[in-house]
Length: 367
Image (cartoon, one colour):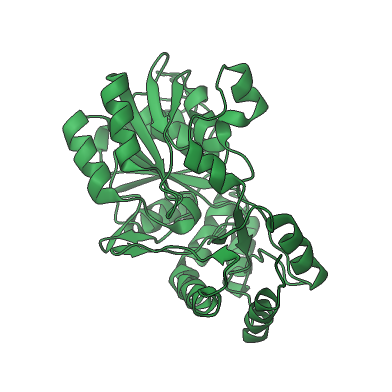
């Protein structure tokens, strides 16, 4: 079976984690600080606040931007549920904006319509989905025009670039995940980035029980236990050193797929706009809705794992229905949920694996 994901864990990861275990400094420690600094520098941001997973990285980012009770936050409905749940954690209200059907990312034109209509949207939470940056030229123009706080959900986009600038460095805050399926991993884990000194200080209090910085027990704000462990950070340091080489392999694989799949009339290959470096957390195609289930079974029967990310929009989740959201809010996102399918693109794929996937996909007999 050719798996959809296959985390790469090498000798450096084992050596560094063994060093942490032998030191018995398992919680916070030097590797956490080192990882924060290294990942922030890699992502072209000033500050990094390591935390326990991507979801809390998002929650922390929103809190750092002052999002709270009764606020409205515009976001995409086509993402993992943690994106909108993090807004609910702040007791704020998600305002769902439709996507660009070619990129799967939030549609800036639709966003402006909502900004004009709602008037009091405090923040915009964009998602660089599947590893493809949003249209940052247009979004930054809207930010300048309407004055909202901008949070980047870059949980799938480590190393992605727009106009040769890394994602995670554009907004007021950004969140990354290091879950096991991501382009680099610490098992679980996340990080919140910012370029703002005050936001960085506040974020460090948020993730450590609201304690005054430099003290052990003085709680000055409502905070959480969102800290990253020294063990996870050691993994992250080793993974970050290899991230660029892994990205290059993902891009090379995706380009080979594109060259072979571009003329198949039952699917549409990923679209990569100018100015963008797509890091292919997922290689996501669109398959004719009547073909998708048969195609998934066909792939599985031929030893290839595939998966749908995501099979529904967020406002159709049972929780959001209970909150009063209705179907039909974002037509393009709903269409995409019926057509998307991700194929293996991870750096552990051998040339034989890639050739086999190409052979199988091209051999599909559609109706």
